[in-house]
Figure 1 (cartoon, helix red, strand yellow):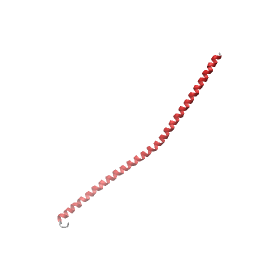
Figure 2 (tube, helix red, strand yellow):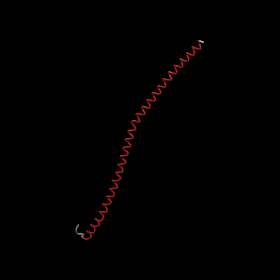
Figure 3 (spheres, one colour):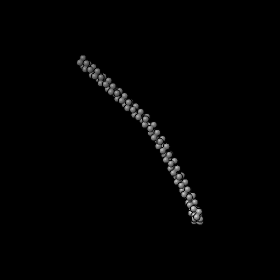
Figure 4 (tube, helix red, strand yellow):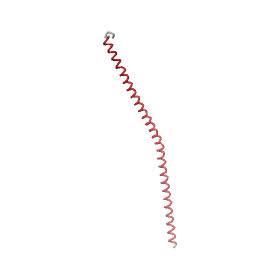
Length: 104
């Protein structure tokens, strides 16, 4: 009977050693997972402001592009109006030259 008790005690000690080792491995794994999560959070913490900055720059560029487009349209309309004004003036000058070719 002592032999079976001794065997049971040895088995319990062996089990306890394995259990302690398993707990240690679990704790290491948990620490490792936490460290990985912290690294990811830090990375995201840096990435999110960059994305917001990029979105702000992109929005600003779109606004500037729209303003540029509007300015180009205004310039085009102004050039067309200028041509319309110049055409009658050129015709008047041509008529004057025909009437008085010696003035020049």
